[in-house]
Amino acid sequence: MVEVIIYRNPWEDPEEVARVTIEGEVIGETPTAQSLRERIADENDPIISEYTDGRELLRYIASSYSNGYVMAGYDSEESRRVVEEFNDAEYLEWVEESGLDTSL
Image (cartoon, rainbow, N blue to C red; front, side):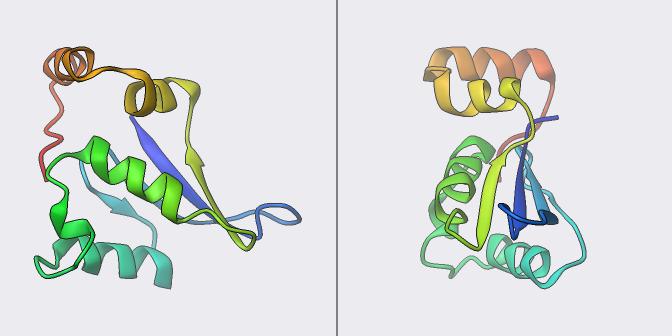
């Protein structure tokens, strides 16, 4: 699975508050997870509504949910590579081979 994990208090006592999969699923029952679910479902959200693919969504989550109090990162090196390093052709090939539906 390709996921981004969001942690609260990442430096002292990390607490996982949400996971977002490349398929656009949000895992977790925290306020952060619920807020992300609502934003992804909201066609009027000014930022997330622009994304049509899970890779774009994970890039957004990884960058925008990282500050001193909250930190977002990939669940594995493979996830980071798929999202950040694959060019478009490599990514489309990976999507086809994986059989995942990454369209949002």
